[in-house]
Image 1 (spheres, rainbow over the protein chains, first blue to last red):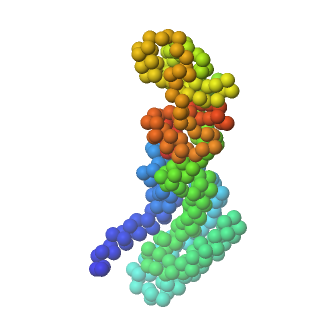
Image 2 (spheres, rainbow over the protein chains, first blue to last red):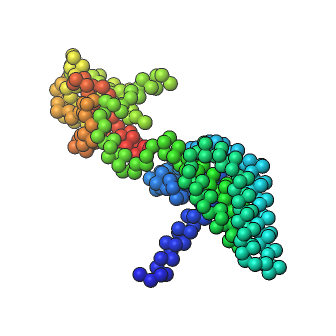
Image 3 (cartoon, chains in turn yellow, blue):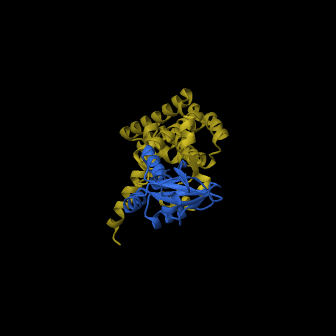
Length: 214
Length: 120
């Protein structure tokens, strides 16, 4: 298999990864529908079902988002995070223009990355208390030095890294709660097969009685 | 989601065919189920039965038991939906009587079963 044969797969993977990085609730819902919960929204579902499932998903996402709103939108944390990342980007650009040594730029980047990590510590503590997302936190801290020394793009990525970690958790929880609410996905054909085995007495209701009651 | 069971139109074995015809007309139905004194399902009469028997004999006072089809395929409340569809398929109709201990409970319609099977 030639390398170009892998290209479509790579593009799909990149598209998925790009779509997963979002802070916009609508885009997050779109991402979950397209990649994580696509079975529920497939051809088995009618337009009415899809609309109702989407509204259910929007609700679960909103609930998860509310849970982590302090961590996502905290002004003090955000100002410090963005400020140190911007400062890092500035020092890198300044360093390259003035011809400073690479070691100096990387070192300053690491220091600023460290300051940023310290600044985020209280928010991280609160976040971990709520989410127990140890994997997310570990990945975040392991990647912080890498992003801090990467030229220009690194600090730009680092600026929103904390929010991305939280949003990833929000989407994960929304997906989990959605599945909990609507049950595991069963294809309509399987559902029909299962229902065929149900007893008549268990599923009938008196049309006349319900008409009178209404 | 559940399946609706509609009330079945019933008559007694000794009812006359003119009475049955009037009943069918008033209820706008094409079939009537015949029950015995214990209200157990014993037969079925369709509008076709009425036309054939009346036109062939012109006897208005024939009894239900004389013209009814005695072997009525029905399903029990304990039977599965699959069996209900089988019965409908066998008798080539879109309805099926449901019985409980031999007594008629109501009528199931094919479209309601399909709706139930396909619902989410």
